[in-house]
Amino acid sequence: MGKFVEHSKLKICERCILPETFPGIKFDEDGVCNHCKRAKSINAKASEKKEKYRQRFDKLIKDTINKAPVYDVIMAYSGGKDSTYTMKLLKERYALRILAFTFDNHFVSPLALDNIKKCADILETDHIQFRLPWPAAHKIFSLTAKEDIFSAPTLLRASSVCTACIGFVKSIVLKTALEMSIPFVAFGWSPGQAPIQAAIMKNNPDLIFKAQRAQKKAFPSEIKKIINHYFLPENYFEKFKERFPYNIHPLAFFKYDEKQIIKELYNIGWKEPTDTDTNSSNCLLNALANQRHIERHGFHPYVWEIANMVRQDIISREEGINKIYSKQKESIINFAQERLGL
Amino acid sequence: MIDIKKKVRAFIVENFLFGVDDELTDATSFLEDGVIDSTGILELVEFIEEEFSMSIDEEELMPENLDSLNNIELFLTNKLQKK
Image (cartoon, rainbow over all chains, first blue to last red):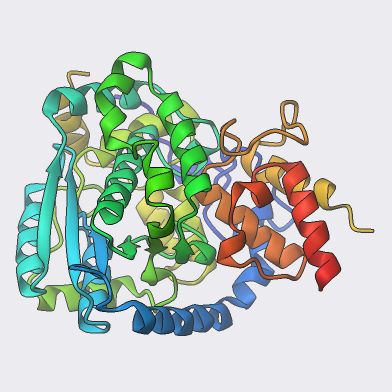
């Protein structure tokens, strides 16, 4: 089994939890990293900014709701706590007509699948599941577990496996939204995953076109052939130019309290899976993806997100350390490894 | 005169290129050359808003404005003149 980096053997930022192995990091004489210093003034204005985004979101929903043919929003629904809570919020607070979309990568925890069915029923939400054929899933995930095919900056924020998987999710939900004239695409990203600027963002066709081209380019030609149809066809960029939806991730501007979220979710029948790692409540491939990333890069692929949450005082530094520097269960890693034949 | 390119370059090099800027020219496409991904572009927007005390509207989030150092300089110069 590969190396595990114990935080007691690493120098980590005294304010957040970024380690000395994080590329380009610098510490001052107090042991505080350059990212914490830069974030200080941004975080000082965070609550004011969140309120502005919330008001903007309320207005946008008011102006848009019930105008689309069938659904107001397509929700990228993994069954994890964040996407379930986001869906609950969109349903209960905003009464949106939701189409929940689950991407089955063959590693969705059975407990998460139970949560998906249960919560979609309770929230009276239409739900579709998109299942990648196993030969394609096997090729894509064994490759990305073994190699880094994406650009180095991308890998600062997520593992190769996760980048591939979420890339398909983003593409397929966008494609569905365009085809069905759905004005919003919702994600359950935590406030640490992306800056608030991403929380309400109209998709720009030219930007998506360039990002998609870069992503496709990363795959070797034998895989490119089998995944091409998951991406937006080139004529969509012109054909649906006026129909590009907003991406929304409301958890960026609503109060994010993990314990409270789990409590509220329990009330609608959601249960915390016990078969996943500390950073996922739905995926059985994540632990292996994290492990391989740590072996190759010397830092955890979730450390950027969790460090952001520590800086924003959403979770304590101690909780952050537990999430990132706890040893993962070997059984979860071995399960994915064996499944992929690695 | 604010040195826009210098400030933005320093941010990108520190945050996305691990301190090495050998291949980052003024015309490098951030998205196509894998310097920054689509989420990274928004981190860049966050930096620009903070550093240059301005707000970037969603209609302005397009490659013509943000996908290279040259594009950013042109975009911000025009925007700052209108302030």
